[in-house]
View 1 (cartoon, helix red, strand yellow):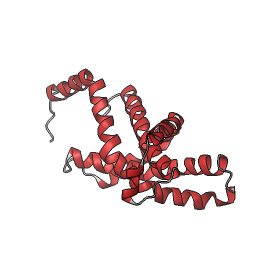
View 2 (cartoon, rainbow, N blue to C red):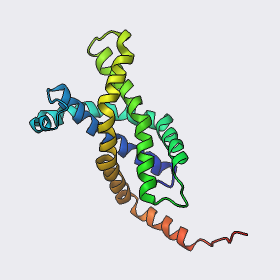
View 3 (cartoon, rainbow, N blue to C red):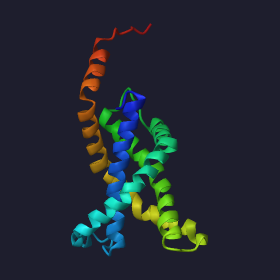
View 4 (cartoon, one colour):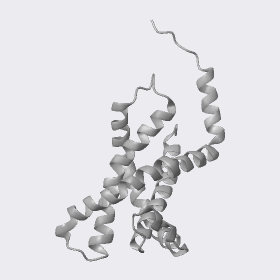
Amino acid sequence: MPKTKWQGIVFGFIMSVTMAYGMEVYNVAIKNGCTLAAWNFSNLTNDVFLDALIEAAYMWVFVFIFSKLWGERLGHALAAKLIRPEKDSPFLITVITSCCTVLVMCPTMSLVAAILFNIILAGQSPVDTIAIWVGTVIKNFPMALLWNLFAAGPVTRALFRLLFKKQLKKAAGAEINAPQHEKV
């Protein structure tokens, strides 16, 4: 969707913030006593949203850095092995790309969270890092995938389209008016 490096940075910023906040709401809720049983999330309080905002205020930076370093590249490379641009719909391409990016970013951010929240802040033994990381991935992956597909992704794309409305319209017009070369 982004066409320039600047647009890619803005898109990445918005996605990083929306993903970090959604995942922090989820994890703070669990930390505050909501279990993973569906009906227990009905017990959320406003404190969860504020505490999540405080944690997301710095976690989005990790999301942004790691997505730019390898998350987007590896996610797109995985997706490229699955999609057929000439046959697949843009919707399917977007879904597959989002899923593959989550497949890379969830383990990455789960490792960051395991080290930061469990080892550094909670004082758990570094010997348990791998076990904590695996448990964190198992807990976070379903939420990260659903949050990306149904909330963060659509919100990010909508905000991006709103911010770059003129440039996207101009780029679409240029593509339509560009001369088409015949294949020989």
